[in-house]
Amino acid sequence: MKEKFVLIITHGNFGKGLLNGIEVIMGKQENVLALGLNLGDNIELLRAEVEKIVREKLRENKEVIIAVDLFGGSPFNVALYVMKNYDVKVITGVNMPMLIELLSSLNACDTKELINNIYKVGVDGIKVIEKNSLSL
Image (cartoon, rainbow, N blue to C red; front, top):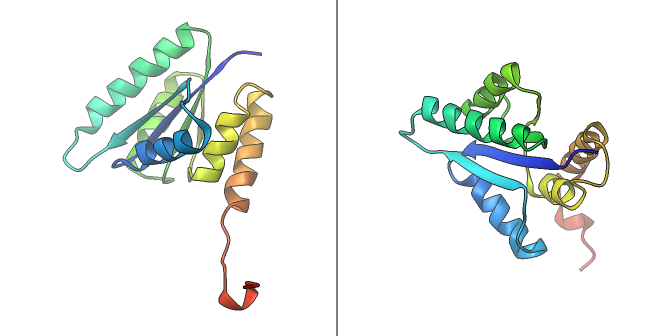
């Protein structure tokens, strides 16, 4: 089984914040990088940077998983562009539960199983909490 690399691409510093929060919980993480597209940034420069990172990681014989924040957003479009030219996996709607599962299980199973697991964890991590449902 190949070693995996995770590239988080989000609007603003959201992905960097998620990664920072995860490192508070789980300690310093390897094989993961977060990039952000900020107001006024050139999307072509982001695309070139992502392509360079993906090429490098594939050359290192790693599988690349790209996690983006929003389906249809600019980071998603960058990931989709890269996906057309390289063998990468893309998952949208990245959140903290997904990333915790992803990074804690990164090389424990094959990529398809891992993607299915993080999808489920991401959805299951969304809850509506009402006052009446709490036992205080």
